[in-house]
Figure 1 (cartoon, rainbow, N blue to C red):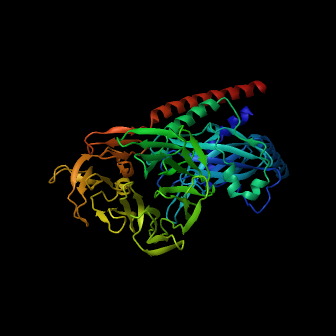
Figure 2: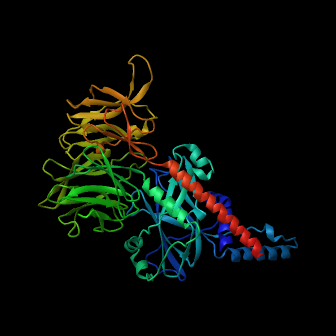
Figure 3: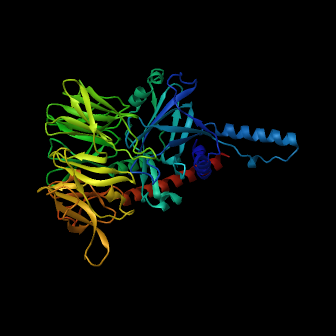
Length: 596
């Protein structure tokens, strides 16, 4: 078994080549829920969390997890040798068993996106046996550009067994970049120090996900035993790496919590940062490894939504309690309350669903279903779907270019033509901030509404045409005194000098583009995305490229850290793992030589 691990690791380069070029046979593991589970097969499920906003320019997430079967490799090798020997004998040629090429059994798990937002869940069926993950793989093509990326795994995750009619729950895997994925050199270099893959020690229960998606399959499984990873000498180091990634979770979902003095930055691995009225930060860890996606205050209770239909509430003792009021095929993407009712918007594969509830743990009423539109369809940029409350506390839905108003008496939605937005948020004080759709690159002007969407102020600012993507795609902030805050390129001296990204402010005294901007301090390099929902009085928060969050209370004159991402410590811990892995491989090789 030890030599099997070493052999699997040594074929990493040829494995990557075969996956990238698709020159080897890779077995499909896709589930047909209308067909019984194949004889001798089990089910494998894993959650994969990328601790970054996206993998690369063309790649948001991984498309496949490529797995190698390792318990039958000697059998396959000898079969290939015998076949080559017979062929050589038949043709009267010389035969060298050392030159015979042979293949492992490869299997591909594909992501099931129903019920997830930023995390991914992979489920498939495989024959009974022993396996190791080869690579994470992603392919992109739009007819003009083709791109593929991969990340070796092997011992970084470990070995697992698949048993006949049983579930193998691999819990949560972590892809952790240590360098900036936005740089082309990240994917062109083969250095192991660019990133690591590890697993979380806590087991993520994926059985409900399998049950909700594949009910017929689930009913045929023997769940008296659920398999997972095999223990080995590297288990403790993997656990430490997973814990470090969780403590340094990437978070970019800013939420202005209705009914609360706090605001929230929601992150991967169930991490949330609460920002109090003084701009101070409190970090909470929820009992989930998935992305936190939504929050509101309802009847003095903080509600936090996540993926796979999970909802969390905090007890008076401070403990987090888990509920599942909706299916695991849906993910929460918004939560709100008008005092009388709580509301929740979920996202599934093809639609959004709006729920209303009077009690948190029961009686959820589905009051609307809305077809989900793609961000673009090659020809047209579409707007998203957003929910907000009007001045009377009634929910309204914007779905691309339609405004939908709910009629309580009839239970029907009235539709009227409206503006399209790429991003949208309602602050706890009621104001709306949004980013319009642009048919050129998707992101248009920032806009602000002080009257619940009846009229909009256009925030006109100067930015670089191509170089300020994150700033261009961020929302404006509002501070007391009806002043709007944004980021624009302003010269320090009006007549000379280079335009620099600065915090800018202006009074919202009239509509139109004639703002009288006042320029303030420069934004920090690589920290140019304003998080307006976190604003407390005049304290502003900005997101940095690798997930750090910085804040300023004097418009960029001075800065301080709000959320740190300790890349150096993760790098150091990973190097310790690499050293231990090399020692383990050397010991395996020594054991083999003694055995032989």
